[in-house]
Length: 315
Image 1 (tube, rainbow, N blue to C red):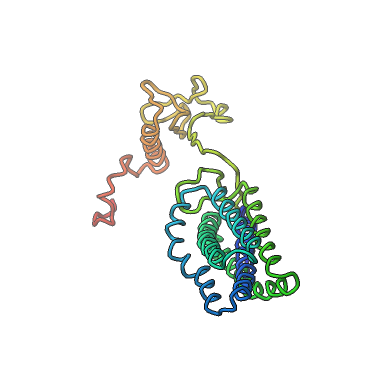
Image 2 (tube, rainbow, N blue to C red):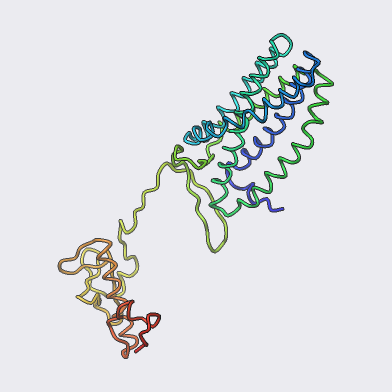
């Protein structure tokens, strides 16, 4: 399996917390189920607990996800995991004294938060990996981590409960959620999910030839295309210059035969340094150069509607 996604900033922490989230679900569910059954002796009450942690939260989670999707991920996910840490801390403290209904209500709240956390993590992973083309490999890694945690989590949770009791297992769950919140809050490279609430934080530079990418932290990108013109060593080519600009005539021809120029490096009477003018200058220079190289070619290229693909034969 490809591990390229692990080199993408932010993904490792997202994958780690995603896996720990599944382990925490196993720890919390097993411990809560045993606590409720121990308190009530009722299989029906235990079934209600499972519904409270899975089915009922799924009814409210979509609306909550849509709301939090507009919040920066580096704030939303740590806040969600801190909320889960607090909920399980309360459950651990109340597991032997509070009414079962209170435990079920706390479990329902945690179930909704857990679903939102998974959804936002998946969205953030997609945003982090899509620019580098490693999303498919990243999803495979997440699925493997999820499967391992899903398969081993209940067994590990059972061992912890057997060794230290349900309250200890619930306390471990709360501690793991707090650790997840710290891991994500300390990261500066978490991407946006798919809302517009996250501000620009970084850009990804892709080297097409080397097929590599690297990420640079940034607050904003300011395109400065053509802001400063510098002809460099061209100044030694023997062309007429005015203030480090190449003097050209009406067909963009320089003072040296076979050399044309266009754009901000040129000057002529009435020169306008606008991008639109630069496009026209480039077209003029290229057509003049082609005619100089191939005298039999016409200077005027013709219109696109006269091209062969529209039924017009080449000259």
